[in-house]
Every structure is written in structure tokens, then in C-alpha cells.
Image (cartoon, rainbow, N blue to C red; front, side):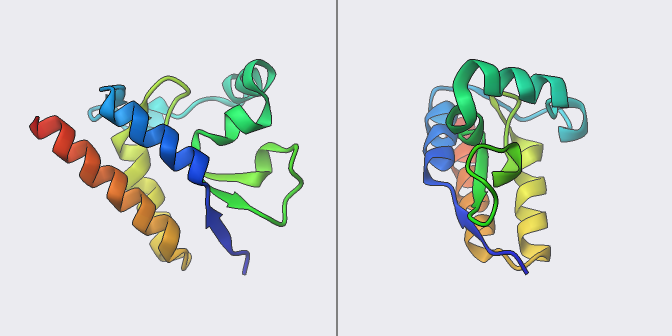
Length: 117
């Protein structure tokens, strides 16, 4: 089984966005998830590193300059989506990626803290 490592740059970006209030805690991930065209646009605008910052994990076995390298998306290239974090946590638990599940859980807790104000 492929082992993913937590993508520190992605987690850091998510934390900053949440602290800045750039999160959506209402929209279902199936409605908010970016399309393939939007993902391609993000790569064109910000490169693979910028695209990768919207993901909680990296597949070290995948080529560096591919979208497949980045796993567990958490937002729509403008804000963090709560449902995406829940989905990422669930998938990580189901597929035995405990570090990724923990990162998603900590971001959910941060979002709850920020919402409580």
C-alpha cells in the first residue's frame, strides 16, 4: 500500500486560511470540489507547488511535476472547505494513513475554535 506523508506546506496554508477566516463550513464537498479544468488552471497560475499547497498529503512515489503527487484536497483554491477536511479524515482513517487523519482533525479543531471566536 502506498504511504502518504503529510504535506507540511499544505497544512500550513490551510491553517493560515482558517485563521484568516477563509473557510466554508456550509457547502458540501461534492459541490465545492474544483473541476479538472480548475485544477489545471491552478497549476498554470501557481505551478505544482502552489497546486500542492491545497492538499494535506504527498505521494512520494509519484513524479514531482504531476497532480497525482498530491492527495487529500481540502479546498477550492480560494478557501478551506470543512466537508473536504471531514472527507479527507475519513478516507485517511479507512486507508491507514493516521498522520493525514490527525492533520485533518487538527484543522477541523482549529476551524471550530475560530468559529467559536
